[in-house]
Structure formats: C-alpha cells, structure tokens
Image 1 (cartoon, rainbow, N blue to C red):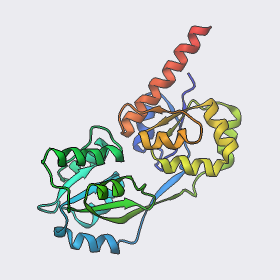
Image 2: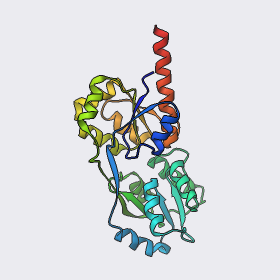
Image 3: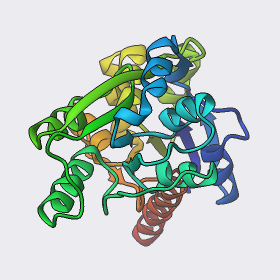
Image 4: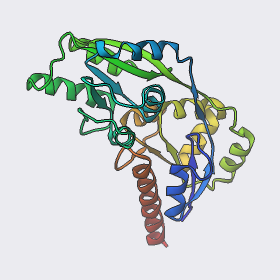
Length: 262
C-alpha cells in the first residue's frame, strides 16, 4: 500500500491530523498550503463589548472559537451559541461554552437550514434577531446571506486571516509528484485547495490528483475540488479524525483491489 499522505493544513509534524494518520500506519508529507494568522482584534473586541445586544453567536470554525474565547473566556449570559459542526462544537465545549444549535451535517448550508427548521418549529425566533458571526477573512457568503434571508441581522466580523503559506517547498512537492509515490492528499478547507493549486500550478496540481486520491473534510471543500475536475472522497465525519480514518480506509481499499488483480 502506498502509505504516503499529504497534509495541506498548517500544522507541526506532531499536529492532530498528522498524528492521527501516523497512528493508522501512514506516512505523512507536510505541505502547508495555508496558514491561519491573527487579525486586528479591534472590530471583534468592539462587537464583544456589546455582546448583550446579540441573541446568537455563530461559529464556523475552531479558529473563530479560539479568537473569541481569547478575548472572552466565559460564555455571555443570555446569548445562544451555534456551531457549524461537531469539530467546532467540541472545541467550544472544551472551553466551557454551550452549544445550542448544531446541524446534522457539518457545512454552512446545513447550519442555515438548522436555523430555518428551528424557527419553523417556533423553538427559536430568527426574525429580527441580531447574530454575531466571527469569521475568516475568506469566509464564503453562505452563512451570512442565508441568515439574512431568514430575517436576521448579521454582524460579520473578521476574527482571523487565512493566508497563503510561505512554508511550502514547491520544488520538493514537484519532486514527489514526479515520482508518483503519493497515495492521498488531504484537504481540510477550500482555501487549501485554492492555495495548493496556485502554488503548484494547474498542471502539477492535476498531475498530483490524477495519481493520488483527494480526500475532503466536508462538502464545501469537496466542491472546491469538483470545480477543478477532481472527485474527492468525503471524510466519514467532518473532523480531522474522520479525515484520517477515511484516508486510511480508502488507501486500504485501493491496495486490496490491486492485490486482487495480481
């Protein structure tokens, strides 16, 4: 089995995804395509200073949780919390924050649908509700636009920046691609898809994913790959653990099929 797996998220060699993959017996190549950086905290601090004017805070990533809880250690009384998926909810709970709304699927559209369903059931009031959305500098419009269509007032504040990583050794990446010895490439965000293609160039990006399996953490990331002509496997759950286990299972299945052809 070709056990080499590319990790495109920015993490150390003992990071959560890399460690999970190694525990499953896979070899890891760190190709950090994106990095998450702190942003000017003034706008977020201002929003949090007026937190009692909000009915909801919506978290779409663990990075947003980190940015908010760094400035506000305890959850604000009377403000309900929504999380886009189990991974984000887990980080909130680890920091002592409740999660009042969690969609069954971990994606932005599902979160908007969860608000709509709860509003229809009259378990929450969305019309006129003020919602704080601490977001990435590259946040897609799905959440803010969807909640506004439901009648909410959404205050979107940049909580962190997602940038191209300067740590990617492109020539080393191209050398691995030329050898054809990569089994899978993991993507934990659409930004990682964008930046890896930009760094490698379309030809090498396509060459990489024509030989190696692409594995996406969720539907938004999968869509970014599909738009480039590559059909990825989807993680069994939208968590780094789910991403690792799906990658391992996919490579094992490929090996079993190859052995059957001998």
